View 1 (cartoon, rainbow, N blue to C red):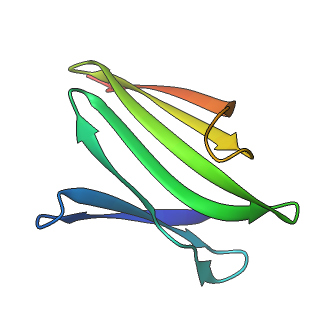
View 2 (cartoon, rainbow, N blue to C red):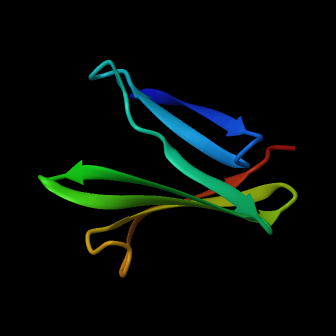
Length: 93
């Protein structure tokens, strides 16, 4: 369980997504990225099973009322990605 805070820096034009974990009581290092042409990409480095990996979120605008979120991990510096979660969101009208 937890929550996120998203912050925009107008000087760098970058967003940061901060995950706050209510189980451990910690705030993790933010994922940093930006939106361009209907697609947002956000990255961070983290440790998973004692290995340093890159974590990636991709937000894609599908329509005015729908978007897709994907989470993927890379253990080889971003050469290959393992997508482990896809979520489609639709605005309730």
